[in-house]
Length: 201
Image (spheres, rainbow, N blue to C red):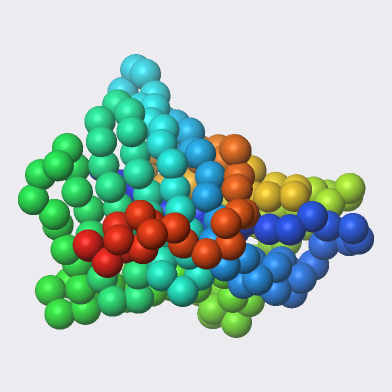
């Protein structure tokens, strides 16, 4: 099961027209963001979509914790040095630059995407950014470099005060939609429990 933790695009209220540069600035100004997620994956060969939900924490200086609660438990931790995935409390799977250079490179690219780094976006995607009015916006990304162009046809993000949805359309014709809700920006630093969880992985 693939999880695409493109989740750090959570932003402050807008009071004027939105630009990509403003988006990048606001994304990088949030030290810690917590939210609930609902994910629906539609696979063309399956009669029913696959649904999951859980909680996530994004810390600018630490990385991402993605806690899927249903239909089975899965924890994903992503930072600058490694990615750790634990499914149903089984032995953790650890990806680093040494044991999987391509995936590690891909994870670093995702980290750049999380912060809407315009330079990196322009190097790897055709960008279609649209201000929808009243603070609403969409960011459509069409990959132009490997490995993204081998996986995704398009990635479309949309929101207003916060990132609300991510639509992933892959090369196999499958679709994933992630919806975010119950955003929390406080406390602005990690709790002791959150610090321990990042350290334990």
